[in-house]
Picture 1 (spheres, rainbow, N blue to C red):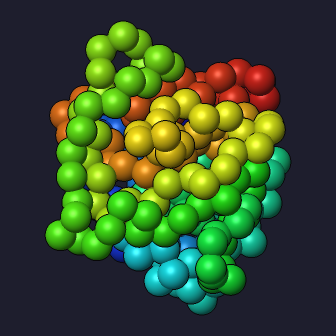
Picture 2 (picture 1 turned 90 degrees about the vertical axis):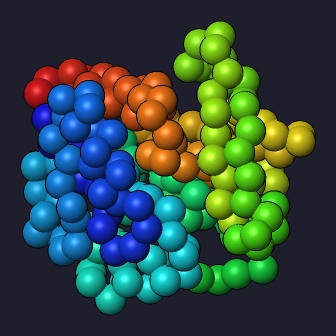
Amino acid sequence: MKIGVLAMQGAFREHIKSLAALEVKGEEIRHPEQLQGLAGLIIPGGESTTIGKLMVEFGLLEPVREMAAAGMPVFGTCAGMVLLARDISGSDQPRLGLMHARVQRNAFGRQVDSFETDLDIPALGEEPYHAVFIRAPYLENVEPPAQSLATFRGKTVMARQGNLLATAFHPELTDDLRLHRYFVAMVQTGNMAKGR
């Protein structure tokens, strides 16, 4: 099983390291032909406007959108959450637009306002998850079939819609592998459903 990590910007190497700790092969993705044979894709943090423009420039936006719409699991963290959302408040930037949610960029403030906190995420078990927020977004609203999986100060910071998973925080910057393990399980379930 091979999971791609979009390597345009951000902490893509850290995501690959987290996957390796779970004995899953991660591959840096920069061109459309590299999408072939992927079981899933991670879109890391960074600057969502820049990543969106680069996805258009490198011919990745439409192929990723089509593969995700066809059922390939996609996990977006921070900027990846922004790119997954159907609506982005105050922006018409390029996005995948697949998750039935509206996102607010840089919702908790600037870089200097970055913070860490413990979150209750029932999908990951009883133990709180230590989350790292860096110029983080949040989802202003989440509509079915999307579901909120975690909130902070009343705002959704983790959501899932079928094969799509999004977090406002950076799981790759911690040693807690539960979120990557959760996504790998999504990928494995998706592959079994396809008979792979």
